[in-house]
Image (cartoon, rainbow, N blue to C red; front, side):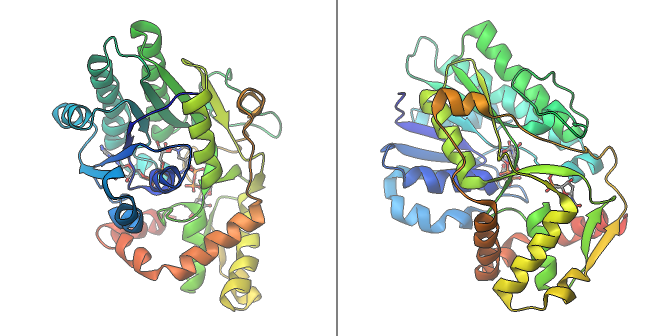
Length: 355
Ligand code: NAD
Ligand code: TYD
């Protein structure tokens, strides 16, 4: 079992990163310090961790920095004596990557390269260090009606987002093979839960229902995603970091496939139950809109390697996780207001007016 003292979490002000930090600092198996390194793009909100920061005292530090800025990354490594990196920072929204791919290449490819290269230099000859890279199932492309992605499925990314994540995955493995950098990697399916930025399917639908706006379903609504509660993702990442084989990649999935339209209909029922709104009025908001260009049809993950080797399994039932998520958005209007300031409205108008 690996043990770390100072973990640099990149992208810790975003959806999964902030949930990971919250989870890790309350995990009895970890007594070290977390350094949250985040440049705070539109998707980053340090307020997501205000309560955690206050409770953790010296066990938590925030550094506002860009992963493509080598000097800033080097400074963080030295100042905090970093012995592990968990790399979440990325541009993460497929629709945005279609409109503006360049920042995806900059952050996801150049940013990952910069982190790897700084780690290689900083950790020369040092034992007990680890670079964990967080990636996505989208690097494997799109499935037909049957089959699942395994760790050996050939890469076939089809959006600028997934292509940039695929490039970063290749760099991580190249640093392992060429320089012997101790790395582990995970490719996960779609996450959901509290603190997800309201441009992704589930929070878009919940917030639009609360505001009586239409529920934009892309194409025929028959695209399939495999959903996993964010805490289960975090537990899997930690299992791989502490017990996974070096140089290996592990798939993480929910084994929980849903067509988008079916999921939106289930959300309609849950939001009605939790908010007291009329279920049929909410359902009448569903609107089919123009499809996403190159829209991947189906993702499904085979996570048997992770289960077999490390004993991980999903723990949150989908209905229960969705209900918790709906309640969280109902209970956190201030957080929602904060993340929707800035360029949010302009982006949403642009994305949806074209459909
Ligand atoms: P997110 O968009 O919510 O958060 C990304 C965070 O990274 C933000 O806090 C942002 O400020 C920060 N960031 C962006 N560019 C940066 C830069 N140049 N320097 C420093 N920080 C920067 O993303 P998320 O949904 O939490 O995803 C986190 C990671 O998990 C990503 O690598 C993503 O590819 C991967 N992933 C996400 C999902 C999902 O369903 N959301 C599924 C599988 C894998
Ligand atoms: P998204 O949350 O963007 O994740 P990803 O594209 O990375 O899987 O989208 C999930 C699915 O929902 C995807 O098939 C696209 C679809 N979708 C809609 O139908 N309407 C929407 O408003 C959004 C944001 C997504």
